[in-house]
Image (cartoon, rainbow over all chains, first blue to last red):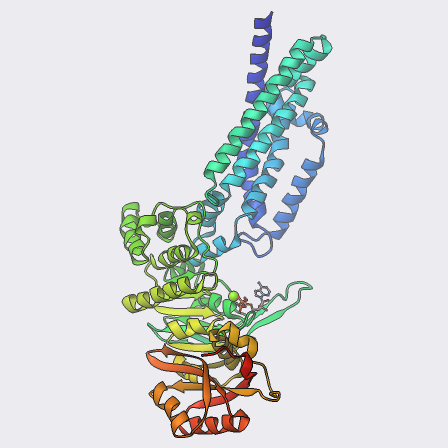
Length: 219
Length: 354
Ligand SMILES: Nc1ncnc2c1ncn2[C@@H]1O[C@H](COP(=O)(O)OP(=O)(O)OP(=O)(O)O)[C@@H](O)[C@H]1O
Ligand SMILES: [Mg+2]
């Protein structure tokens, strides 16, 4: 009985972890460069490209203004195209990634914009090339803020993954709804909620710690 | 070493933007190995001017020659190489908070793709030069302002530049630390025969550091020359005001409070400022004033500075016999080829005894 719950929980947690981690990784791979470009393509900035800035900024805002559950349903054809199916844990990664990418782009943009412009100027005065400025100055200086932002994104994605669970994605959210709600198993519902709370708590604490360790600005 | 010809900079001018004429035709020539000061009030265009020298700022008109090269003609790749030969130090240090002292000083070499072991060989002597060997592994947030600026200086010098640009490098520091940084810069100038351009709004920095100075006001050079000459015979009102500020700052606060502008009220005495320059020493003049000219006065404050190793003194005296006596004193001082003037009045009772 309780071993059954445990194995259900463990499976669901692994599924959630898998969805979130893959979406987070791909989202960072896509959203990271996008964020850096957004932060550096404005007027008078390192890679000035104002049309690009406006267009990408617009797309990012548009994607972010769609409620996730609607986005997930709306892009089902796209999901089917990418994942071959629209149901299951792997398929759920597609909408999660689509939602994560613009979110991460804004997070990274904010973090990079937070770097003192005097540092860019100093690097330019040393003869740094634009890409060197990105990799030697902007990203290292923005790292603590990026870590905090990605922690926030992870927590957000755990929430979203529960929603894709509702549309057949598996994971903790799915477990909670199928067993806890539809089969009247309040014990499973409670277990799911507790696991979610603990996991989110752990992630937030770890993220905060890491960011603090990386931040050399105040001691 | 550096020649600026008819330099102009107009900011803005973008769609619907307001334009600002920050530099209005600057001609300057800075010799190899000298410390050249540029002084002016806030907004005069100092930072704009210094930033044109390493092309952080593109000019609207005119030309910048460094070592005979018109830097506007450099390609991007050439500009990168050129900038390595021009170090820059900033008012707010602009150190990377994520790098240690060592890492910050190493950065210019890393950018130039210098191999790691050679970087180590070159960073170490720089840290020694600025006296921070023991702070090598610290982060900037663990340093004092003066130490941060030392890191900034080491970083600017590590690539062995020909020119060092300093934009208000002591403005964020207290007077004592300022003095240490100025001494360090002087020392570096001598040792490395580096050409230095020093921007400041404080006459004291010019006085203690520079060989020559140009005064910039509203985008124009209004006066320039040897530091001593500019100090002793400031021609332009802006220069005079900057020097007056400096001198005023040297007056004790308690005195500044009790001296007021004329006309003096009944029973009040004029305050005469006497400026000593060159070989005419203090003592003879003062004793002559009282003995030969029979003038009764009270010394309120005074100081002697050395500008480029030549004495430059200022004395504030209260003429006890009123304005006639003050005028006699002024005439006497002027007959010795020194400058004197009435700068205000005091109530004798409010003057601290002694
Ligand atoms: N990027 C810019 N765009 C528009 N105007 C500018 C810009 N940078 C400077 N200015 C204007 O140009 C003028 C000169 O500025 P600059 O920074 O050179 O002055 P400064 O002499 O260095 O002053 P401070 O002592 O305050 O640093 C100022 O009026 C300033 O407002
Ligand atoms: Mg300035």
